[in-house]
Length: 284
Image 1 (cartoon, helix red, strand yellow):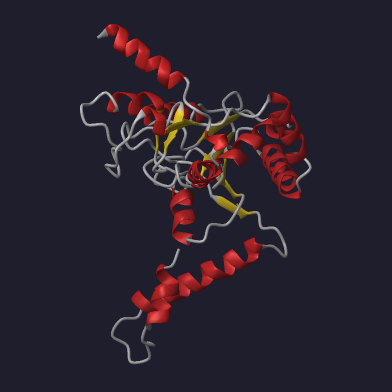
Image 2: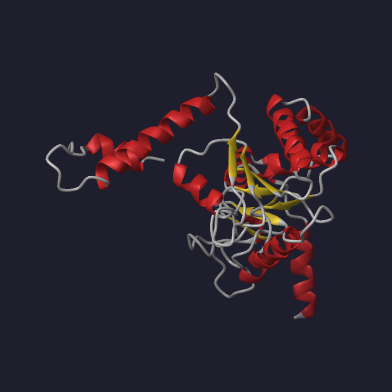
């Protein structure tokens, strides 16, 4: 049995790169970029050695390997027959030089420059003040690390690629008081939306607006919690004449619809909520 298992592993190591399958590659990129807090459906943790199946489901390489050892080999999600030949590995990561070029371009962004100026001003007022920078894009958090370090900030990152234990460690480190501890936390909007306490900070920066205002409010509430001893300042960075302004307008419409639907029950002046209003309220 041992030699069969060894042969099986060798076969899996020769798994083709998904780059040669454009349809599956687009699916993998969409899932991993748009859902940065994506977890492997088998181990319920951020995927390691990411693998996508021919039926377009994403798993950890070790997890799907164990699944395929069973007598009846099938996809754990759709139950379609599945074999090693139906698995594709993630494309190789970009070279370090490409990442360096991306980071240098990020420092020229007007929004990043504005954020750094705001953080420097806040640091001048109080060197020990802690700030949380929220973004809905994991890659944006990574790209912010270098310019913030160059500006002299001690930073930490909290995103959906981390398991619960790692997130707890980051939150604990962020709580170290004084200027010797980290002063800026780069946090995922979704991964930091609930269940954590960031009351050690008193400044919140939202890099992009999210279509659902409740998601932003949840994230802000992580800072504005019981035990907060300072006034909390929230800053939204919105690019003028961009889609971000339209997202803010959509947020206001959703707030208005929610108020009309649930805030004035029993009054004669309340306008009835029609199908179109409900669709706009609940639409993605």
